[in-house]
Length: 82
Image 1: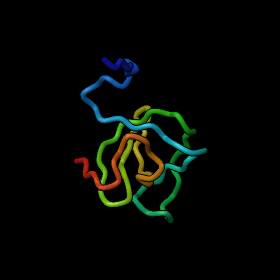
Image 2: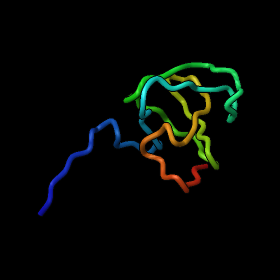
Image 3: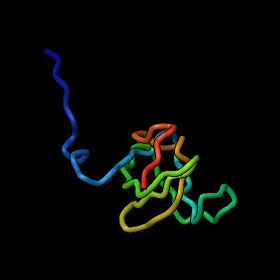
Image 4: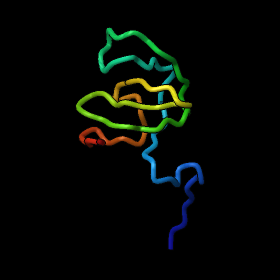
């Protein structure tokens, strides 16, 4: 008897996540020392392309990069996405 809702933007065959925390760096490679290619604020929806170990490859408005899995809501800690 419970009800809930899902935002229509979340209903897609593409895997999505939401940036959590504050402003986050998006890097060229899955490495803390890699160059920053963009920054995104908390609440921004991203397309998750893949996740392995501690990093996920994401896409925001046709720009690709990597960010730590811990900075994304919607990706489980032990989940592999390919």
